Length: 243
Image (cartoon, rainbow, N blue to C red):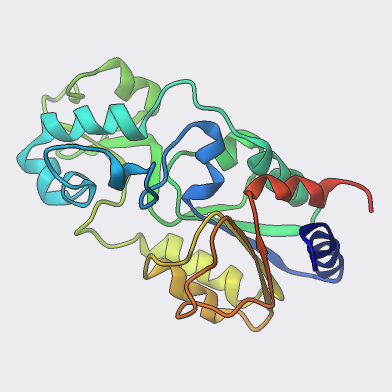
């Protein structure tokens, strides 16, 4: 079965669904110019003094805040990044009532920029930050304006609202995402090989079917999809077109 036939099958699955959930990874945003993490062209393949897992850790943030922010502004909080066809397709399907919730491992806020409303950001977001001392919140634009080392008016450093290595996921976000997935009869997975835990393990909560669109096969230890489409996430746009 070629991809065009598989897309038709996925459309039929979506049409017959009453509670579909979208689950996305870094591959959803690569067409917007943001790197993924583990591909040869991603963050893992870029040469820095420290591995990205070290730089994006809680300990590194507090011990080497200036170096953290240098990396953060170079690689994560990239100005001018806009949603791509995949983001807009997901938002349109949500607007039509076909998708009830978006669960994402990304921190770029592009699903909301495209128009999605019910979004669970498992790893936090670059769209805001908070002073580590007084708790004052700042928008991404305000953090950008305080480069190279963003500090609060009280003098303490501002921490982006992203989940760093060594930090727990937000329980409220996790509970919301797990609730949506557990009630789903279809989960559409895109842009992830499902190799990052605990996020990948959430899919085991669904009692429905799982469809995957990704450039490479998903990890067999994470899930055995009912439908797997090997291709670019831009194929999601096909789901918004008339049959």
